[in-house]
Length: 226
Image (tube, rainbow, N blue to C red; front, side, top):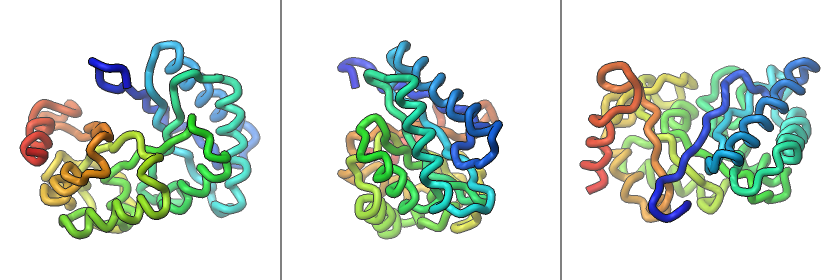
């Protein structure tokens, strides 16, 4: 991060599906991701957060070589000098890739530890996938699990969102901070976890006026971080 300014990130469109075996979807997804990454690098953006997509029943292990091959080709086409690809964990609906921490680790390993590829941890998605964040103890255990499986050194940013639906629901329904099933205690624990002290927390919430991230959500996080 450049001194004096916060990090900036793109979020790629949800239409990208690197896990598909569709001959039309594959090249379009790869090209779109490469385009995002190249544009981010030209503009001085730190990274591109993206969802890998759905394997549509083929299974993660079968889809893995195609996923990482397309990621590698996107990196080769964009040839970024500073921007990185950030794999975001998924809420777990359908056959989505990245719902379990082990899948994120497997993708990073298959890319040979390429430092241009890191991860984004979404609190709502993790909770929907069965990782409890509601208390100080369970939030710590979830970050323990991330550290053990994926590695804190791979974590570039936290998408900070409460969840409208319950633990293990596999539904991606964001709520304002403290207004959902996670609640304030869990976010307080994350904000005070020393392993996350230098990781940016980015709001991705509906907002109290329905207009997206707002000052009120920021104020809640600042209060919880105090």
